[in-house]
Image (cartoon, rainbow, N blue to C red; front, side, top):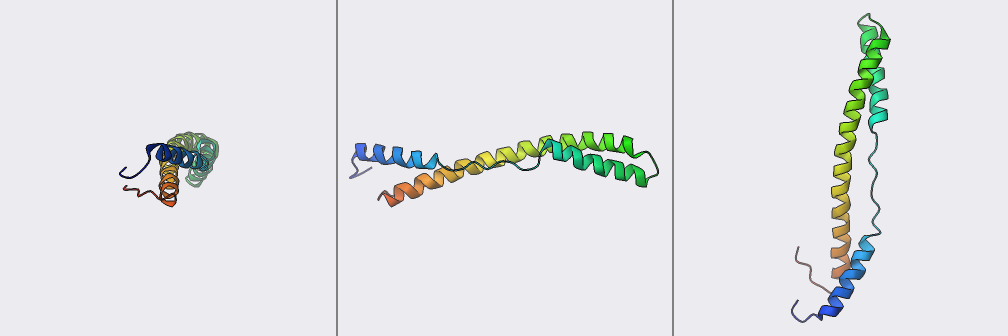
Length: 105
């Protein structure tokens, strides 16, 4: 902060944070419904190949696929949230650098 007017710094930081607020948040793809559909298809195919009823396999496969889809979506959302924060930090750092500040981290 040596040689920097604090009021100018606060103003510039505020403007850069506003700009970072325009970063688009990515949506997680896939999810529970698509997991259930994939699980149902795999389950019915597996049971049919084994000589059983595809309906029971579809039900079991859908349940497993639904659970996997929910878990996978939660992980994807966490990953996207972390990437969103990093993208915002990058915008603020670049903005402050372009305004003549030395950003240390």
